[in-house]
Amino acid sequence: MTALAGSSTLAWLARLCRDRVFWANAVDTLAILLALSLPWSTSLTGIFAFAMLLAMGPFLDVEVFLQSLRRPIAFVPVAFFLLALIGTLWSDAPWGVRLYAVFPTAKLLVLPVLFYHFERSERGLWVLISFLISCALLMVMSWIVAFVPALTLKQQVISRGIFVKNYIDQSQEFTLCAVALAYPVIMLLRKERIRLALLLGALALGFVVTMAYVIVSRTALVTMPVMVAVFGLLHLRLRTNLLIFGAMALIVAIAWVASPQFEETISSFGIQYQRYKANGADTSIGERLQYWEKSLQFFADAPLIGHGTGSTRGLFERAASGTADMASSSVVRDPHNQTLNVAVQWGAAGIAVLYAMWLLHLLLFRSEGLVNWIGLLVVVQNFFTSLFNSHIFDFHEGWMYVLGVGVAGGMVLKARDGGAQK
Image (cartoon, rainbow, N blue to C red):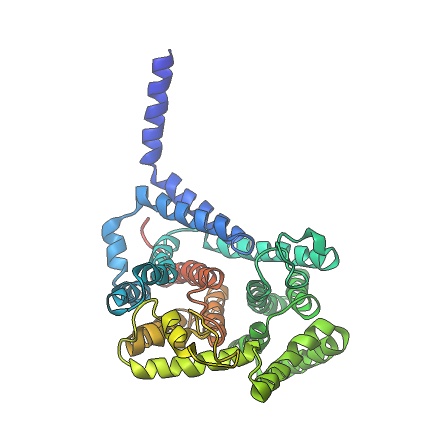
């Protein structure tokens, strides 16, 4: 009997391994879990991403997948990774540093997989909604931690209202969700579905209020008006745009008066710049200006193919030797600007690949509809925040880009092509 039961189990497992529907559903589930975990845990995000890729194996049509790689939207991210890999050959950094610098580009290889899968899946919207729900729960936890700091999981409480990760990641999530919700709110109001519109509008306002009164990054403050402006230009009339920007100005004024945290964040722009210019103080803005100035010089020294993968820190170390003031002597492996980060390592060739990827993904979402709006917003946010950070290479923001563009892009391709054969 035991042998018979074992044989039946093996037969069932064998059938399960050949069940394409089961594995397709498993990939959907893992993608949803990835979206749920992204705002909370780096480790879980990596685990679910790896498991999702493994689950693709049993039902992946290799020939069709390889054909899908011919599309520029899928090939250019792969080219980005290959450039980083090949760039190790002319770098003078230690090999361990070179290979470590390749890893941030490896997540881009998941983009073609997501395009392929969600061009066939019916659950792409579930993934996007899961991310929204997870961010909403994090927003609630942010308020709780703001009033009870001891509940934070951070070993060192650096910023008020941070339960996990950091205020930059949290601001990126809340900004994306708040502006993304503008589209369904407007569409629901036009259809006179007032209750649901008010519910989603209240959720969007909750994200904004959390950033105003609890914690917000300077990058989010700069990029959020740009994202709202993009929405207004694409979807609203001039009069409505004027009303919205008037309302935003009023909200900012109220937040300035009522929220010391918000006022301090805004004021820090001018204060840090003045301290840096006056005596070379080691401020965040002063450091960035130094990083950018030096990076432009590094780029000018090797404009075509750059200094190679992982070379950035070594270049900054050599530039800092013998420098007295604190801002000029900072040594980093990231100049806090995506374009310059790429330019230093891979020159004009890298810049061409980076901007080709952004442009192709932007054009992918040029049509109307909620999914197009979400995908467009993910690209726009990543582009503008990358003026102040290397967000393609950062784990959290990089995965926000890969997941958002990959899932929304697959859904757009499915609608555009009338659905792919499963």
